[in-house]
Amino acid sequence: MFRNYVKTAWRNLRKNKFYTGINIFGLAIGLAVGIMILLWVQDEFSYDSFHRNADSIYKINSHIGSGTSAQVWQTSPSPLAVFSKQSIPEVAEAVRMKEREPQLLSNGKTKIPETNCSYVDPSFFKVFSFEMLKGDIAKPFKDDNSIVVTTSTAIKYFGTEDVLGKTLSNDKERYVITGVVKDFPQNSTIKYAMLFPMSLYAKNFGGNFNWKTIDEDLGNYNFLVYLQLQPNASPGVVAQKLTKIFTDKKNEDPKNNFFTLQSLRSLHLVGADGNTAALQMTRIFLTIAIIETDSPRSSGKISMARVAHVATIKGIATLLRQNTARMT
Image (tube, rainbow, N blue to C red; front, side, top):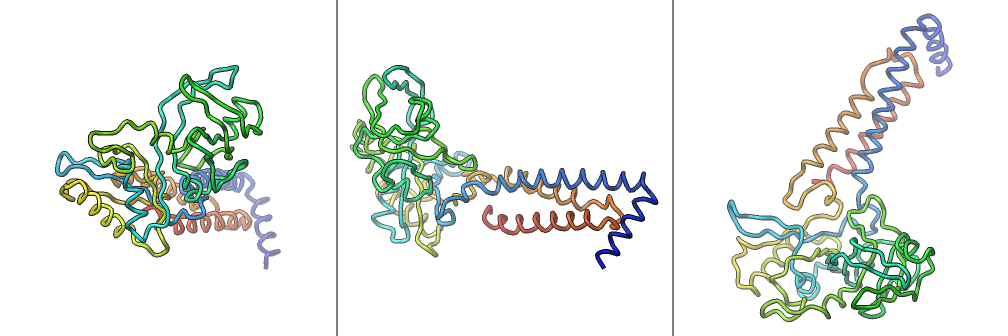
């Protein structure tokens, strides 16, 4: 049967060389465009999927005010991480991140400006699956003045990845490198060049009105707080519990100040306020890919081209089924 298809295709090719050539060229262009779009769409949908616990990790978003003054922030107060671990059994782990201000760091010879740094809790490497190449992943920071750097950062300062024990300093403090992490993947929404312990930020915290520590400061919404939930835990229920704990402690109306959980895998394409413009645009391109590969540029007698066409369509359909549910 297959041999007959090949013979028929060959006869048509020789009989109508010009029109068959146009059809083959058009089909090839359509397939090429469709496949390129498919690869881009696949990359967009793959963000943060490399984490082992990607489907159980959520970021806390803050909803402030009501009516026309309502705002949604992707950051939240630091104590939410503490409350969730202490009082909500559905939470397995919590981690806080806070970007550090730009600084000028020296390796003893050269001063280099650093702008992509963050304070993180030690649980950072428990919640996320970033690869620690050197150092102790269970205890990434030995003390308040320890730092973890990426391989690119290590090479930038010292020309090698073997930098454990080496020091970097600014005008005020000296830091010892206690870990080297593999460069953050391209398809990660979290990307830093250097990590500092949250305990260092806590030590230098000067207080905020009556709140003396970062674990009790309910007025500072500048932290990214991620939660890893227990299996089968409901994000909505966890968010309601967090809101109640917070508003009870701060004596506020939960209608004007509440929290929601957003899945890690949706962060790249869905805004904290639920805006799905980027997701819809990606789906539009996915539709274009389907149209491009499904256009009848061939009579169907060129069997190998049709096989490629069917395989591409099946790939696109599978990708759409696998990712649509996770992105909503």
